[in-house]
Length: 347
Ligand SMILES: *Cc1c(COP(=O)(O)O)cnc(C)c1O
Image 1 (cartoon, rainbow, N blue to C red):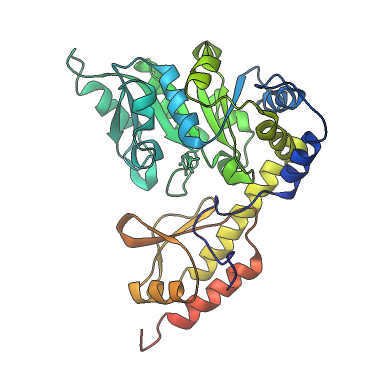
Image 2: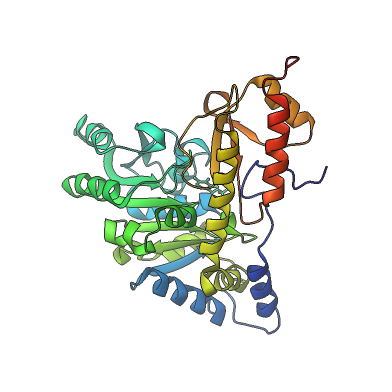
């Protein structure tokens, strides 16, 4: 069985052809280092034009660095950041945000389907206001969420209203921002600066790059001295063009959006095929490129024995992720395997 028989993660996939081509083009001539090159200028301008606003753009290696440094730029070490209890910054970044900010604390909120609610935020901000508690300064939202759901523009505006009331800046972890834009069918500005997002970490990696995330400051005052923060943290690539040129490949002809639409459509096909099978139940509504599904343990074990790779998440449900590279045939092979296993008397 080939290595591509996986729904483990969208970051198992390789580099999409358009990004690869741009990287090759960037390799033809020498260019200034440390982001002073023409590709980085083009990619940053491309993002400004995509968001239709004059934002500040920086490129770093990965999502943990993007989130950690963006959050550090929002507050001081005695501040706190409100996020959902399932947020990647809490569960999967090894304390990176706390480390980068010299100790800012994450306050964990709740909400169905991986989404923070205005009530939960309000509760966390108001439960303590004394000097002995880290002062809430930022709100971190993951769009799309860790469980494959999206915040609608209305939900974002309701959250912004609470944030305004308590003077919180909003950070958006956009590891799957492209998938959220595709799912909601909105202009990227509608779910970022028009909804009051101050800084967005926009992932290229999960969309089809080898590496590279854009940190996009809509609130430009937060970006003051950000390049020094990146440099100190070891996040200023000297050959920056190898991060930024592939971004140009993604931005041209909206490849980023096509990649996301493809991944979302694959997950939709997968979810449709799984829904209604005996013993199989979707754990969360399928909205972007991931399907979270409860299946009997022996079925999961047999799928793995047949070579399928996927992770388990929250309470044992299987997380099936699709990417720009997922194929229809691969989905149908997986569905055929599941169909042959569920309801089987010996399983
Ligand atoms: C993948 C991911 C990131 C970034 O992870 P890195 O491995 O540090 O690049 C951030 N947030 C979410 C929700 C993710 O899924």
